[in-house]
Length: 117
Image (cartoon, rainbow, N blue to C red; front, side, top):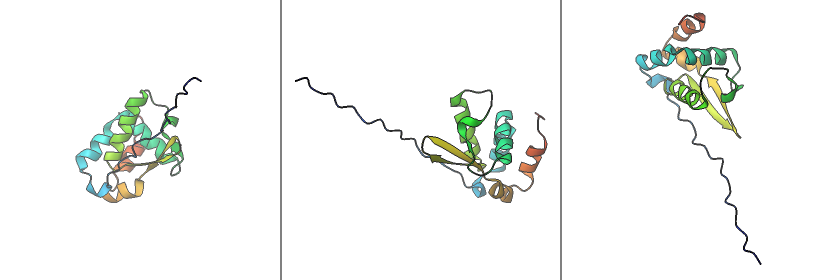
């Protein structure tokens, strides 16, 4: 009788995203996060979507998956983005109210100046 090999379970474990409280974000951090053209696209598209409506892979930006992940991390660290896992998907929410409370009018400026880089 041949010995059966036991297949290890494949864990689809991902580290949960870490979110920065917008109240603890420095102005310089917020400005740097919003200065990048790719992150501006992400923020604009999230501003037009409902909460938890957009998954990470649904953005049409000219970067690799790894680079896109880094952009999401920068937005989380600036208090602009909240993410949650739903099965294999990671969903996004723009933390507009929280960010606006910390930096009134800053997000509006970015959203108004589409294509101005």
